[in-house]
Image 1: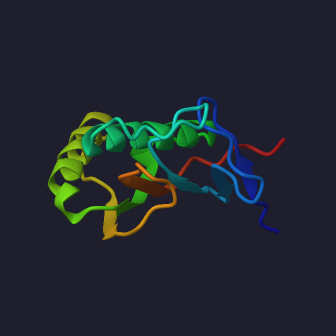
Image 2: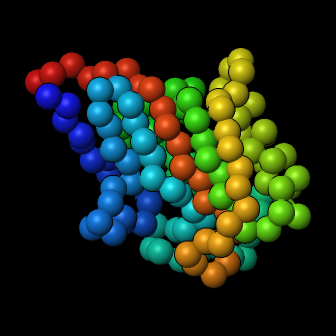
Image 3: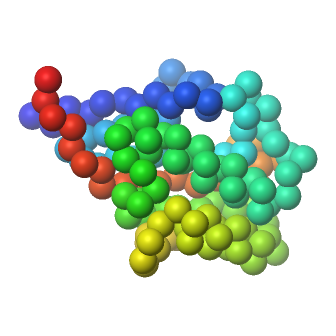
Length: 137
């Protein structure tokens, strides 16, 4: 029987009770959409899209680490961007981050232009990773 384990990561705003920052099942770790939000819930609208992207990817890494993985375990990232003209700047920050925290080929990725739930959010990213399974207790 598959067990789904919620993942809680330090340094992130608490997820609403309806979902978790991430869930782990049989080595697959799905990280919920993360955004440029401080632990106290402040939307970092003062940051440009590159810095929002870096902060968002750092949040994803916190969830991955809390789930027993790392950025190197990421198979897929989905980037939700509010403004098509921000694509180049977001993509440069994304490439810098991937190059710094991962060797070899990058993960699969999709980018879509959308409306996001909070004013000032320019980017939101979710991730799917294959992490080493933890031994049963």
